[in-house]
Length: 266
Ligand SMILES: C[S@@+](CC[C@H](N)C(=O)[O-])C[C@H]1O[C@@H](n2cnc3c(N)ncnc32)[C@H](O)[C@@H]1O
Image (tube, rainbow, N blue to C red; front, side, top):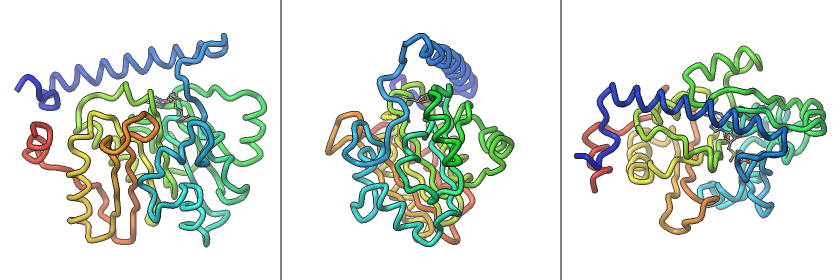
């Protein structure tokens, strides 16, 4: 059993979570150093549009329905809701990403990151486009509450998460990660879409999870996942699309402990 890291006792899981929170504090401090010219990650505040360097659109291209560019898909999906949309990037300032959409498409957009590293120009641009940046831990169960307080909004039509290196801090605990994903799903409006980059630790279980969701939710949740089989380089790894349709359940389905164990041990 020693190689089955996910089967932790609750004590071990609490310990791992404590360590995760300490790592986050440490990362926040590293990001703070940026003001002194030091960037912790190589990728920050990436653009949305496919073809641009490190674009968020390229990460999700393999899972975007209709093989469309992410930007095109979102514009077509919400063509009738111009000016009413609310979008958020989790694990990033979302500043450049939302600036790649036509002005006025989103009523409000936001990014949640450990540190707000925007310069003055970006801040001005964001103010003009009704884009806000919130410093908070996206894995916290208090996320929705905090967003409600800071933005006056806690339900979103578009949720994007492409943390790249930031994913390295994941707790290797599928129950914890399921709770995080489910909290984000609960922040998604009916009719909304999420595009998430998932930690590599989940590659073993996500294909099975996708099958289960597609089989058990009778089309009310649509999802597609691309693991690491076809392409193995960072910006195309672990991409997941989820659409929440009318009649979708209040919680995302999850694998049973037996299904989890089977997926991790095969
Ligand atoms: C490599 S950068 C990627 C930023 C952006 N998503 C992009 O694609 O350009 C990783 C980002 O994840 C953020 N991050 C990591 N863990 C986080 C957490 N638990 N809560 C909020 N932000 C987190 C960091 O603050 C950092 O902005």
